[in-house]
Amino acid sequence: MGRTSRKKRSTLANRAIIASAALILGGGGLAAVNVYASAGEGPSGFSHRNGPQVRQASTIDCPEVVNEIPEVPDPARAEVDRELAAMDTQITDAYREFADRRDRMARDPQLAQNAVLGPLKARRTASIDRIATAIGRSTERPEGLGSLAPCSLRADDEADEPTEPPSGDPAEPAPGDPTDEPPDQPSGEPTDDGSGGNGPEDSDFVDIRSVQPGVDRPARLRGASRGTFTTECGRNQNGKFNPDNVIAAPGVANGAHHMHDYVGNQATDAFSGDDDLAAGDTTCRNQGDRSTYYWPVLRLRNGAAENDAEADGGGRDQNIGEIQTPSQVTLKFVGNPTGKVTAMPRFLRIITGDAKAFTNGDANANASWSCTGFEDRQLKDKYPICPEGSQVVRSFAFQSCWDGQNTDSANHRTHVAFAQDDGRCPNGFRAIPQLVQRIVYDVPPGPGFAVDSFPEQLHKPVTDHGDFINVFDDRLMRKVVSCVNGGRKCR
Image (cartoon, rainbow, N blue to C red; front, top):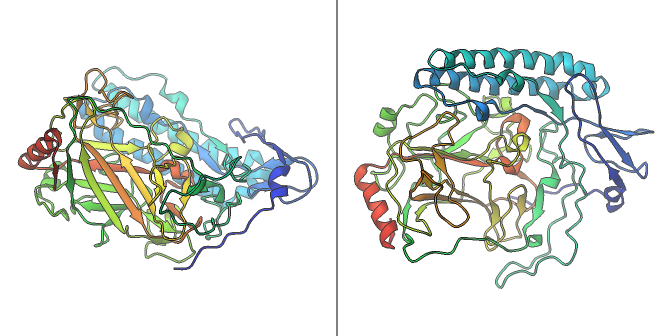
């Protein structure tokens, strides 16, 4: 594969940006001005005729309802999950409507209110009411959720940032690192991939050699569990993909609105129950591990059509380009730095990271991007530009503390937790073997790739996430715990 070339913006134009404000469209008003010191080239997403510059919206920003829902009674959970998935579809549909007429809406804010935000609010209000009603049949009806119905338009805050290298000299390459010249610096413009402005921006990429090393880990105490267990489940060479999310949107086809890679359990789709998973085939070498491991696919955004170009989760959801099979996948379970671990319950479900972190913020984000040979340098909200001879690395360190009772929770998060800074689990939680995934890709250097995402998340690197359902049999899980607690390296 050849190197992907990208248009460079002049340094003068980058320096010309002197002020910007985010675009907010709630009640039909527009407040978004960007002033340039010259009439030179402006960043993508801006109109720069004579006079003040108007910032165009890039996406739709909606409050995340699932984070505000109280505990959901079991009889209501299926209906609540379906409505939450329906709300994701509502945003996707509204984003398509917005994207089709983005330029007109920039000139006529009331069109955005009438054609997109108003109808979206009405649909969200109805779904929120159905959620409250479902919960209210079994327990006290939640109040105040209706305030989460309105959405706004916002600009891509990354698009207009100057992209000169950080002040000071770039970090020196570590011994043995490739020493070829850095690739072209990102320009802040959208990549030319036929995505219609759906991202990512060139400013979402950074040369890994400009990133300072620094990976903090808590000190291991005397009683730490120092062993590891590695399960070998392949790289998805057989091409198992679907745009479902059986954890977050069970029973809903295309619940993710983006395509997932799957390794391990081959029975996994939106409609898989525990019994289906227990009986499913697995790609894992040890047949006692029928767990499900999945994550958004990574694509080359090179204009070439994948076979899902007209399918849900693919082109219909603005996920385009050639899906890349990882060159390496490592699935390793590690211990706790302060003490022993206990067995995971079978069918424990864990989501790490946040597929909506671009609009939700980074409270649940857990993306880590790097390059082989540079993995002491980790990026959370940028894609790495790797030198020649170095490959892109995605890694996920999953939550390693369990509440001791539940295999899932209403928001799919509160039954598990991350260890605290000192390595200890929060009160009421116990340490379990921590899943650490490392996924490597051999892609051309430069800003020419992206992970799949919900359309309105614009393929931002901070939205990267991973999902895991534990389907180890009891015997193999006992081995995992014994190896980890005993300080051994097992497979």
